[in-house]
Image (cartoon, protein in one colour):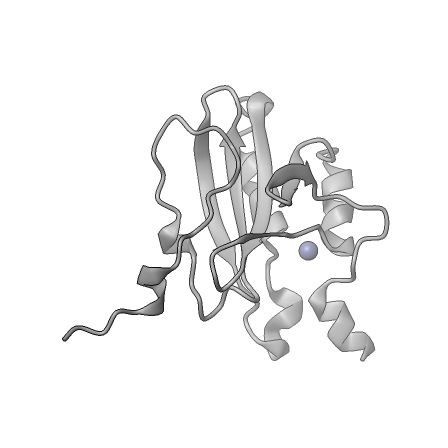
Length: 150
Ligand SMILES: [Zn+2]
């Protein structure tokens, strides 16, 4: 008898966006690391397509300060599409172990980066399965700084 793995039993919640293509998000969900990993994607609202997508996980406490946040990676990718990114939007979120989409707001460091490039109206997360801004008034400290202060 075959052992059915956990990942085969759970349903990975799709981001509440309109898609022209039928994307498979399952490969981005890892039940072993989803508590710490953040998903980012660049979405074109006109073409209803994902332009690019990735995952960011912390690379351990010793390397924490050099770890690139999902937002940073997304912003860099967004800026690489200069001239074509008028209709692009950035989305960041987490998945729970069970596959539900969880809110991920920008930390203070990423918030500064977003403001530097004036992307406040371009970066979103999801709350209760609805789109909302990933920029909040009192952004949490990034993990690296939290460890430093502790
Ligand atoms: Zn950050």
